[in-house]
Structure formats: structure tokens, C-alpha cells
Image (cartoon, rainbow, N blue to C red; front, side, top):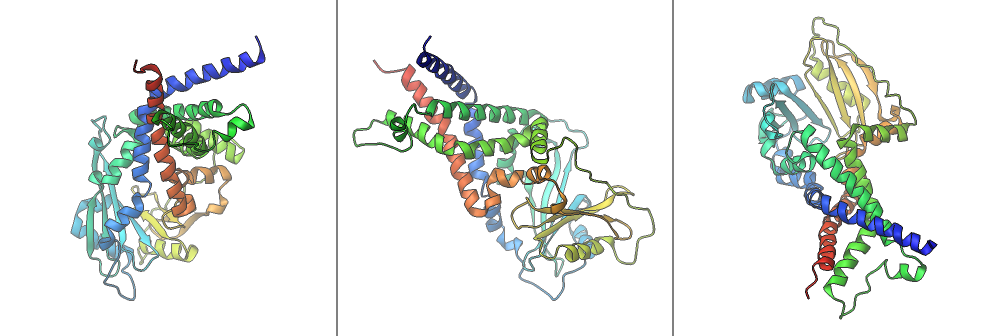
Length: 387
């Protein structure tokens, strides 16, 4: 068997793999691409739609203490606020938000929303304590899109493996697609890197070029988006990413502190926590923390450094009785594997590069959605030709 024949045989089987995997996973890829396109700019659109409650008009010299704001809000909204966490923004024009979420104690549905008792966001004026708006996130459009993209609206342990293996298949398709696209020589390469359309070019040729040329240009970005999706879907893949980034299989050494049960101080620990946050991270975008559930639990603080992104964050643990800082872990203290996992969401949606990155992610998702459609038309045209 000649070398030329071997190459042809190899590409033949690669083509078969590309075809059947595409037919098997095309619907999942199209579905993920459409929901991904819709979700990319969810934060910008949601902030615009909620601008009347996101920003305050009544202001004073100082904000109310967190503890007072918590009690005032609970009096207006009832017991649900007990399960909330508060997000304090450094922007003086922004309202503070309470995020309250609780699942059913005994889940009885295979669908995600069927097992949620409540999930709401409450916007509060930090200067007056006035509740500006209450949103039920279970019926929010972008939250529904997110859960469709995450697990097909099914419970995570049911829906995510379907999404994960569909994404894994898509990665194989991208790799096999590049192999099939790869030209034999420079002359052939010139014809495959750009559209050579003329007035007489038929739609089948245009469809073929859309599939091959756009697919080639977007393949590297699509693989990155797919890999970051697989980090959530598979614990083993997340472990691979962590080991590749950190160079070790040992998990990060993060100590969980405990509060010492004692008589609370004269100043609420919730208020002291905010003072500590502002002292340690004065330039951060927001501080997120809540009341501890157990008697010896600590106040866990998530410090979001960059507005609209999560790849830089810090963590604090504060005693719930005395308000004493027990531990501080800056972003700089994390190894590269941890930083990769932390940046996973921002890489996935393009937010790590700001608005240009989100635009790039949107375009990539749009083209990824085109690939199963154009690929199906190529297959259909070849196998069901009109006589």
C-alpha cells in the first residue's frame, strides 16, 4: 500500500468519525451555541433592565450599618432574608443587594426549578434602608437560559453529563475537522483560508465554504470555550486542569477556621466585617458575605476585585461573635491551577477580556451554531441528491 493511499485511508476514517459524531451531537451543539449566544451579555442587559433599582437616587453622607440594613430588610420581607447573603458595592451610586436562595429539603423532581423553594434578589438603598425592588430569579429569562445551558433545566447530576459528553464530542469534531481541512500543499491552502465566491458560485459551494473556512478560523476559540465548559461538567477534567496549572496533584492548603462561641461584642460582626474588607481591599468592586449557619461557623467573605468579572478574588474568614479577622487569602497566594479554575467562568464567556472578549465569544458561539446546520446540509446534499 502506497503512502498516498495510507493518507487517503486515514482521512477517510477521520471523515467517517467526523460525520457520525456530528450527526449524533449536532442538536446538543446547536442548543448550547444558541443559549451561549443569548447568555454572553446577560449581565449588561440585566443591569440595563434593572437600572431603576440598581442605582440609588436618595443618598446621604454615610450608609446604614450592615446589621441595621439586614434587620430593616428582614422586617419588610420576612423570614426568607435569613437565608440571604449581602453584596456590598464600593460604587456609592449602587444599591446593595440581598441574594436569597434555598433548595427543598427533600428534592422530589428531576427538573432543576422543581426543587427550588425560593431564589430572589432584593435591591436595597444602603442610605435609607428602602427596598427598591424584589426579583424572583427562578422566572428570570437569563437564569432560565443559564440553566438550559448548564443542565437542560434538569438536576445537575442528570443534565450536566449530557451537556458534558456532548461538549466532549464537539471537541473531537473540531479536531477531526481541522485534520480534514488541512490542505496537501500551499496552493490548496490559499483556496481554503478565504472565500473564493463568484456570481456563478452555487449555494452548496457557499454552504461548504461556510462550514470549512469559518469552522477553521473559530476552532481554537471554540476549543477553549468547550474546555472551560467541561471543567464544570467533569470533576476529572477539572482535576486535569488544576494539575496542569499547578504542577501538583495536592489540593490547595486552605484551612477552615472556627468561631469561638462567646458573648457578641458591642459592634455587630457584620459591620466589623465590612470595615475589615474596606481596609484590606479598598479598590475592590464588591464584598459578598452572609450570616453563618452554625454556632461555630465563621463569616466567609468573597471579595470581587473587578466589576463584572470573577477571575481576581480574595477570601476572608471572620469570627461571627467578635468580628476578628481569622484568615486572609489573597488572589496572589493562589497557585496557577487555582487561578485557572477561578478564571474559568470569565474565560468561558469572554469576560476576562472585557467587552471585546464577550463580542468574540458571541461570534464564536454563533459560528459554532452554524457548524451542525451547514454540516447537515453538506451530508444531506451528498446523500439525497435530486435525480
